[in-house]
Image (cartoon, rainbow, N blue to C red; front, side, top):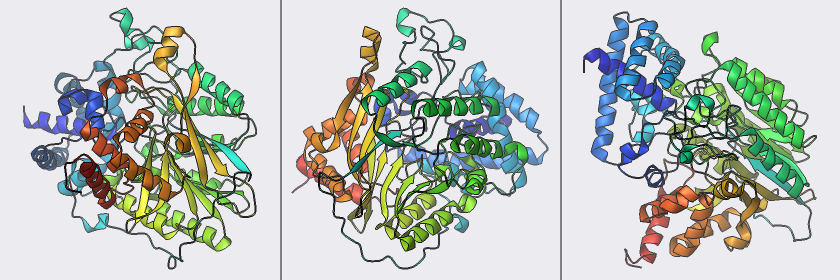
Length: 598
């Protein structure tokens, strides 16, 4: 391969990496793609799996650094962006192996961002690769990457939480995540196409009846049919008419990453918001910015000093217009328009804060340019919590990217965890999406559990999931309310059954307290569940069934010992900089299996 082809192939590779275009996972991991994902640490379903072999990791990091140096040299010689785009499309098809449709659309979307970063910054190759490929094990030694948030005051003594008696008032709360509506979904179309989103007229002719897209949604690379989402919302309204409010933790746009645009993304955002308003009129909804809402997806720039054509202003304006119709009074227009986050005093003494976690997601290549508390968001969050503490308020935090996944930016995750530890007394719930699995992250301080992140399953089947949603029971309106999650249930529609019967059936898959044998849902109880799962494989197998939404493709693969270890580790990890709780729970698992002395 000529040097210029190496440059352009790497240019394209970095774009594909940051924009979540997947090469074959089976090729990357050498086994079943679902099993490969289960053998990895927690991440988003579109995030590229890093190699497991340490020598390959080192090689990838070195290759990245060499390639970045070559790219900079080529640009220094005056290579224009149009040239890079056209050559990039050729290599995208002929060498990388994507479809012409994908490459024609995707390369022009991502190239201007990379071009801007390389031509307006003195990019250090080791630093760039250490940021963009940190999930692969690459590192940066740039001291500017090790920043911190100022914390106000000393942490007060931890106040024990007294849970309510059973007869006390409660609130029923709906958690939606990763709806990924596709308005172009067509039943009977090709569900086995070569692109990352199928089940559309543009997906080509099905090769066999087995390739035809199912009516209610499909386990393959397909988005959510509108009628399936509406059916789910009707079921929720029918079965849970007493929902008090809705948590909606992001990702509305489907996975057509090669053809996103301001117009398409805006249409999806507006249509999905209209659906929510229709089925929950007058009910408060608290939305979150997801990685798919931006075009190109993931790429949320620093709002300061950004060229208009690369800014996210259009998205924040759309958020504001739509959120003003569903969020209770008190929405701060300025923070939404600045960077898509907000804080609301929902009830007296009860605050809900929505964070734009895209500034802590390594797939956002803008972090390579500057990663220091983008939009001053974590500083703002800490101030909000400090003021809430002074006012005697309890807080729920919302975000899209969970802080403990492999692709969480390391410093952002560490600082977020510092804030959670400082304000342990008032933070009574954290709610995320993104992974499409039904899962949890337990937060620790010195080995002591201090909180839990509730990570909701997706409504979209993309890919290999049953559509699902969660219902929480939360301590209600009373003088000594804790605002703790007291219980939760997860509901699904089994796609195989719906396809075979032509009838949708939503049902409760599990209840946390009953199925997991939990006395309550405090952080101590979740930590204890992790320990019990390490010592009881049968209990873990129940958790794992729920973790994959009882989806048939995953159940066929199963969860082997590697999967078992990874899921336990994920459960106990809220910060990839600190794996102590992970190591301890895995050690308990191995002792229970007789692999270590007890």
